[in-house]
Image 1 (cartoon, rainbow, N blue to C red):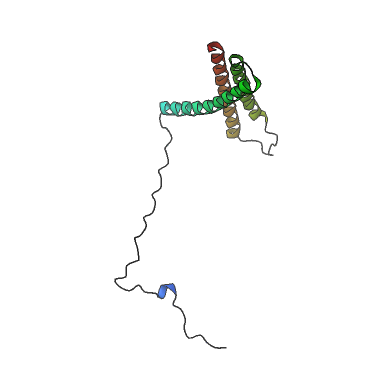
Image 2 (image 1 turned 45 degrees about the vertical axis):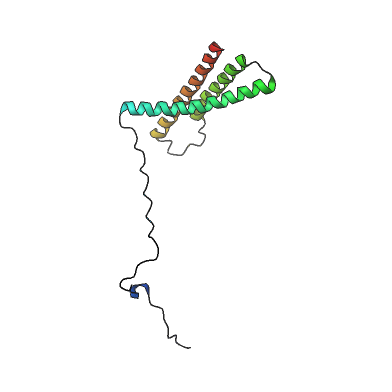
Length: 146
């Protein structure tokens, strides 16, 4: 077996010559975007929660309005009665989603559920009920205005 005479140096044995400059500009590292801090005051928490509620109710209401407009144009339904009914049905479905979220846990671990998990389910159910009632209230407002 022939021995190899030219061995490459290991990385620790390499020396950088004096005066050597890396070619081209050195790219800067992108700065990490600071994460938004949660609100620290009660008023800030209420404002944050109301903003989230407005976004969710607005998105669901936009879907309900689109559905009612589709029913008005495609089924030749009357808009003054279709819009409130669609909002009523949507609100009831969202509120029933809150009830289903409480009773939809079929698999139970041997040790049972933790108290924190149960509290989260009840909190979610109240949020669903609140969103559903808000959507029903919007339907009542449409019925009174139209």
